Image 1 (cartoon, rainbow, N blue to C red):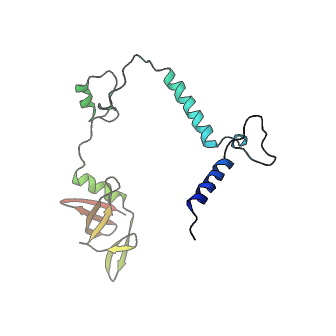
Image 2: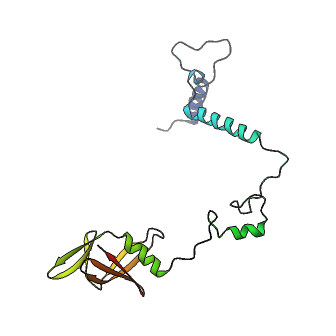
Image 3: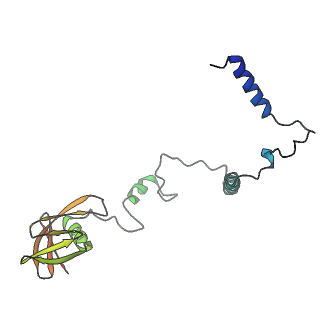
Length: 176
């Protein structure tokens, strides 16, 4: 059975009447809770602290100075003309910008960071990286921590305690 619209309206009116604040001069019934009697929430207290801090910070701002142009590069030195600020984009911390990393440098960095062991199985030497073993000529998949890209290193030669890795036309030997 569906409640009639009159019953729904009466229920809503009764609910709204129950939530109405108590008039001035009338004390709430004993045991009744009031929102005003509750302590302020920690979030409201924290927001008041933040607003107070922001007001203190921005109170010292010179209102006559123009607002910064947000279309400009925010990572430039103040007072430096825009033309020379473009030249600063290539520098990092006062040093000249580094040229892109070459194949040989990347191979040296990746091969030096590998943790591997040498294993002999059936008279053949293997390179053990993680839970996998590799023979001469096989490819080893390495994740480059700088670019998060997968790089394939070829194991060119295993010689005693030395392993020669290759990347493209570059070679790098690591001693165990």
